[in-house]
Length: 182
Image 1 (cartoon, helix red, strand yellow):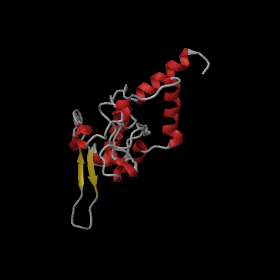
Image 2: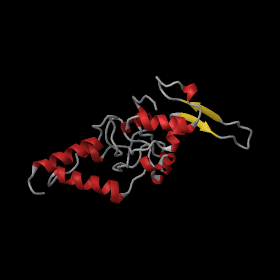
Image 3: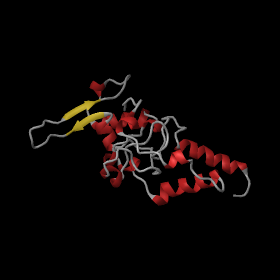
Image 4: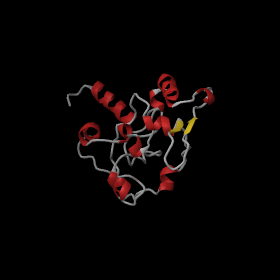
């Protein structure tokens, strides 16, 4: 906007992070990258019978806390007794060096996660179960991404024909090469 390359460079670093140059190696915008974002809280994408979400949605992504459902569905299986006779479960699934038998409840697992799991490993894409990480707004996530990318692309840029004609990916294509891990 005013010719100072420091601002352009800072914007480029932020865009690089958003598009996958981060410790997870994955973008926070749908439709880009080889390990695409495939689970987000977007009801039209979940209901349209197309496996790939609508492209161009930037989610909030990683935040400081370990989400409740991340702790109860990824790092441990903690569920109370139900009326149908299910006795419940208390199973920690922490990686070594933790002794899972010593982590007997949800609070102890969450305490360990908060203390030792780095922020960048706290992304749990559980759609509607982990709303703060998988939701978005036009004003807070998409709008900023469009503004910065528009400034970096320059005047007259248009997408290549193969970008605009690409068919949605199938679930197998979206998950190709993925290794599920907490």
